[in-house]
Image (cartoon, rainbow, N blue to C red):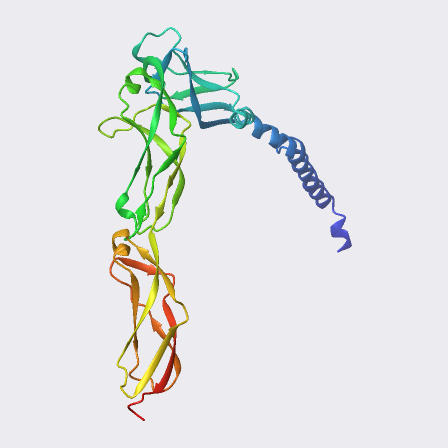
Length: 321
């Protein structure tokens, strides 16, 4: 067996295997595979395509002209190295624009341009052209009108004088649009059955006579709307009205609260001089206290008291003696 390991052919075979393994190891570590640093570098220089939406800027004499019709943003597709595309998307140090400085009043189809991009990036814009309408600029001051659903107010409650702040706003836009404005509206939707004051900051819109919204700039763009909602009230005396008295008894009734405040429509309250409170004495045979629920007249929606405590003193009448 020892002679077997010493055979020349066996030694040659082992040497050949070791040489093959060495070649594979060298190729693996130096030529056939990249290091981590080399992989990162390759990744950064790989080609990438990415699309981003950017605001569309307009070059025009804004003191004299107003432009409508163009989209607020356009899509810009960038193609180039991974690192450069990523950096450009993150910083967005380029701009998309249309140049209207030499255009006349009216409608035009103009090309969208991009500036500020590296010459190592390929760029595609969508849309490539946009339709614009150039008009003379006009500014004016207009009052703000409040619109709201009055029928949402709870029954018995009344609306006070509404208020809006500011009461006037400055409106700027194309002359054709400004001339069509019928009102600057602050539209409010009251919740059904509302029984308290309403106060909210709402957006303002410019409308023509047919209620269509116009494309103008309103400054400020919002207004504070206040709608007072209240209910009339009246304080009246409680009038105890005993019933089902026994002829053999003498009753003395005293209410713990002598007055009650009623809430409702003014017309209904005008009819109420005092609040009659029936007190059933059919089951009363000796002095006691009784809690009586108040019954509200028609048109009265609520009271500050739901019930009243009545002290009842009972004595025998002379006839019974």
